[in-house]
Image (cartoon, rainbow, N blue to C red; front, side):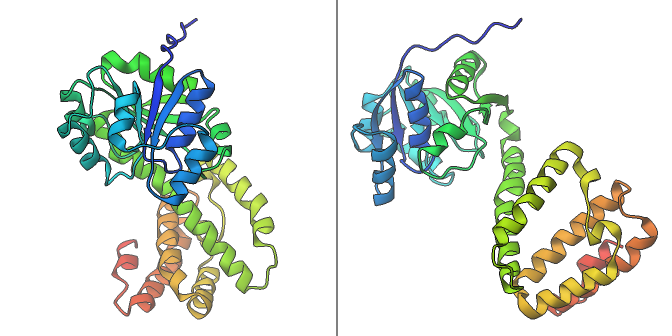
Length: 311
């Protein structure tokens, strides 16, 4: 039986960036016995989130957050993070021995190097979850995976913090962080886009409650995909129903032209995967790929080279 990671000492916690993620993580750490002492945020929404999730915790500038906290959560957008870390290090805000944690999926710990040189202890803890900025986020952390990157000497501390927040640590190598993050964006962010488009089209088709119609279907599709991968592919592309796909493209061009390019791109990707895994029969693929090539030509006025290249 494996020993549990050591329970870290009770720490004072600060949050730089009161977006949707930081206050929820700090609130979760508070439930585990740590002590949020400071949070920074600028927008009205940030102030409201901090007040709701961390009541009584003072709102102060970032440098004062680092002055007051032993564990600092840097929960800012990816593109802001490098400059923030550099600025905090250059102004002397970082203290030796301070745990500095960012929650970016894109970066590992190298982005924290300026702070590490100032004596900080760097951790990358990325919760694999979408956040709403409300108390429900704290509950959703239970069983949530965290993409964790940490120096070898801090691995036990990183693991303990994640477990205390109710999460499950998954170790990601520094060089694999961008690919890891791209995979999550592909699976989650673009899923929202596809579902929103589907609901709009159903409304156009006269469906009064597209969310109720899609819920059971999408739930089953997601469950099947997680269980079986490409073997779960269904629908006209996987069956090679070229006529049905052509009708789809024609209707989308008429009622929702902005959706055509996305439909064709996903159809081509689905056809490629279905062929590769034996779901789509080779003898049915040629007509289907021809329809997709023709649809691509009609979409941009060009020769449909992308579709031709899939033949």
